[in-house]
Image 1: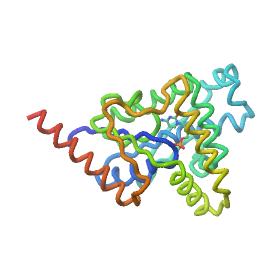
Image 2: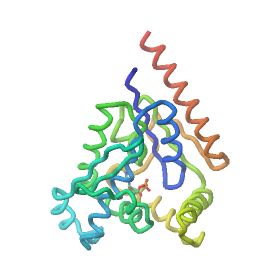
Image 3: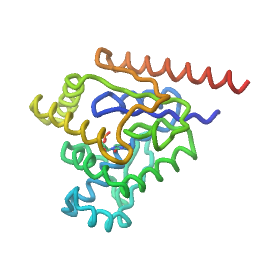
Image 4: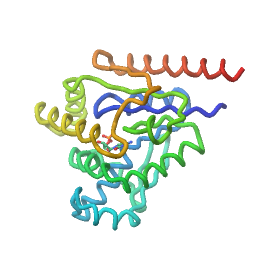
Amino acid sequence: MRHINIAIDGPAGAGKSTIAKAIAKKRNLIYVDTGAMYRAMALYFLRKGIASDDVEAIEQEIPKVDVSIHYENGEQIVMLNGENVNALIRTPEVGNMASTVSVHKKVREKLVELQRALAVKTSVVMDGRDIGTMVLPDAKVKIYLTASVDVRAGRRQAELAEKGIVSDFETVRQEILDRDKRDMTRKHSPLCKAEDAVEVDTSDMSMAEAVEAIEAVVAEREQAGAKQSI
Ligand code: DC
């Protein structure tokens, strides 16, 4: 089978993970959720009581943080120094910490190296904020997924509700706006659309429709690639 990497970037709540998972399953590719790696790193700093702006302490600790991933029944398991932290990294607190610690160059360097190594070995669908621009600039398919802030806040609120967490819409919306701002304006690898990415706005789409739209882009790119190599 030909090696094909699919990069999906976009802001929180655009539907990246749902869509990436569906595409990976359909095409029998490995799904790599890079946000989970930043979340695992963030959990480490939260547990240590290290503030997200304490650059010195963060850089000192980085060599002691081992983040790795493996797969069980097709599900990505994130290990933090040998501990499965999947169940601990989905809280808003960890998400916000991930966004604030991911501004640091050394944090990014460590995780980007791990992400690139995964995509060399096997074809992947990788989602995050800098996949098309930084991690896999040569990915065959690049998607920039977006949706209005109200729609994204609504999805996030529904996700929390599914976990039994009651949240206030305005608070969730404001958190998303703050996170967008931080992720899009940071100095190192800010979230932005790669020049050769296809932008898909999922505001008015169901997840099934969004998967179909992305699948059409992937198929089209694959065909173009096949023609080029004839
Ligand atoms: O996708 P997520 O919500 O799990 O990501 C959490 C944070 O991690 C996000 O706000 C910014 C950071 N992140 C990043 O900087 N680069 C990535 N490739 C993935 C996530």
